[in-house]
Amino acid sequence: MKQTHRCPSCNVGEMEIFYEVDAVPSNSCILLGSREEATEYPRGDIRLGFCPECGFISNVAFDPKLTEYSGRYEETQGFSGTFNAFHRALAERLIEKYDLRGKEVLEIGCGKGEFIALLSQLGGNRGIGFDPGYREDREILIQEGQVTFIKDFYSEKYAEHQADFVCCKMTLEHIPRTHDFMATVRRAIGDKSDTIVFFQIPEVIRILRDCAFEDIYYEHCSYFSPGSLARLFRQNGFDVLDVDTEYGDQYLTIEARPATGDVTAPLPREDDLDLLKDYVASFPQRCDAKLQMWRDRFAEWRAKGLKTVLWGSGSKGVSFLRSIDTAGQIEYVVDINPYRQGYFMSGTGQEIVAPAFLRNYRPDVVVIMNEIYQDEITRDLNALGLAPHVVAV
Image 1 (tube, one colour):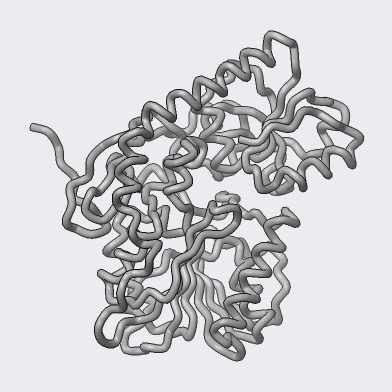
Image 2 (image 1 turned 180 degrees about the horizontal axis):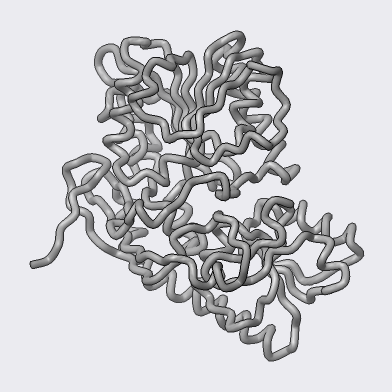
């Protein structure tokens, strides 16, 4: 008998499987100290299912026991000037828009604490951040006692921590039972109807449209469009104030508050269900064509004897290397995050090196994992006296 999967976002539709990948590394950002540990790291399967009722996409084969969020989970983007400028501008915008000054602010899944620190520092707010992977040894610019960090997953047991502003950035995509999680957030807010809620996650329409296979990996078990995210919020007792995309349309953001009466009407950009259905139907064939294009590129570079490196050792890099199977053609992956340097890529085992390593290695081709950093990376390469061919995924 064929197994069925009820949608964990709307709890109504049955998930329709449309994309399958076997044996992918179950963690991309864990620090792995040897090539052997990296190549033998546990693996899981991806079975992406689409809900025709609400538009939610989920890995129905996801097993949370295979993932790890701890002190050795190293995900920060805070060493990029491009990202830091975006992060600061986002914090300033939210502070201005919602008058977050002298308020209580809370972040679910705060990572290493950079964003909750910005909100607290720039607005003179009191912050609290939840994340099992938080590291006390990281230096962030806050006054003593201004932010409290709790090294745990957020849950209803922390409902006593009330806030004027609740944010959750790049975390919901890691949570399989999204409806249950949003119900928890809403219950924790209770009758504090003036609380503003802000979520940021990867945007799935771009992934489907561009066949961004590098953005599909095991930790990300949940994928949203503007419409499916807004529907999840409305179903769990929130009024949706705004839905938008930013950072080169890679990030989907939603601003909401607890609903106190009739739920507000959907915003125009929430009407995306037909578009999603079309992209989902054609995704496997289009994705196969894109993968073959990259394999052909690497074969051409190999035939020409060109030395190639990847730039970006995070989840995109892990997914890209696993998908393309460069057959030993790439020995090194570059990353500006010093905390990742000297470790090895999950699944494929390449060593992660600092940009300065390239001064002597002198690659002919640099494949960068995120186009938004192309100008920044090109400047870094030029500063090293290098001018390789730079190709963005």
